[in-house]
Length: 478
Image (cartoon, rainbow, N blue to C red; front, side):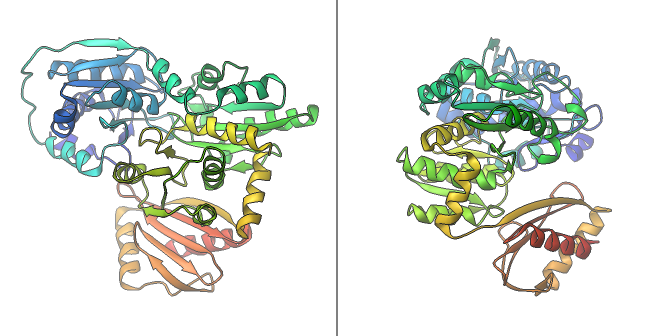
């Protein structure tokens, strides 16, 4: 028990590890029924049942681990609704709410490289469980699980049907379909060999130019993360399309491995992260759908987000990094949109969960109803707010956890007063250290909680300044 307890640590969204090393059938069989027990203790009075949703993505042996989860959770006395196919993680979160279940256990490692697999624990309300729930699961690893007190059953279900129907009702599907059918809009979708494969075609009923749609446990030698370095094929396909087709608008949509993160490529071939998509979506949903509510952003989010919110008299609430903190806020108050810089965006009109396919539909709706290429839409918002910036992030491996401790102590005892020859004018400590600088830029230094990795984030007026600041931060850390 103690060995497993040392290995099983939940991060910002679940537990993950290397397949066959940290992530094994034995450990999954230990963790899953404990997670079900904590879900029962947390949400049992609300739901009045003992049903757990079990789902998986397309990773190596993902369905085998899901079957193991279903077996051990059923043996512990819980009824199980087990998926009969891969699906996006948000589809299983939706199923948990729609089926009035205790929650969902999803086998996925999200955007991580192919050697990883993991377990996400979703709540009865259809979002990530709060940190206190995963802490309870970790604490129970030191205890023996009591035998089942009642018989239970496993039933199969298809998670796509109800999920797709829910998403279709949230956008003007007809307008999007008509624009694609008339050749006014061409949509490319890079599903990165992941769980979004086939999703847009199911939702739209149109021909979608989907790439990397085959199941590849090695993800082409990279990782299913919506970053430019993994999108060479999408850039090439869209470039070829531009050279031979001049009519209509074009967009590329990018989905991570379990389809809860999104990015895009505009008609000119420019990569657009969620730092750009979130302001576009705020503007579209406010102007054309008359949505109201608070905007929730993580501390690493772009300064363009509050400026666009101010255009529409919307308040902004800032959280630590991790969508579960956004989900907590969505349960407390009326939220229009909650988003994080790594690609997760969710909506108060849906479940408190980031959802890349729903975001994709809203992005398509914004293009069709505005008549603008995404890049032009972004430039329009920059002009309206009189604010333009560039952004980048690097993850810096550290030699050891001891080095991590020394750097953290240095930040605590010797606060930085100057960064890259620019005075520090403010420091936020919501999550890590976010330094505002005199030239209207910021640098954020944040440590991974479970591994020796330093995450460096920067937004500045130009990309050159961003890279200069990140280089300074890297030198400081080393």
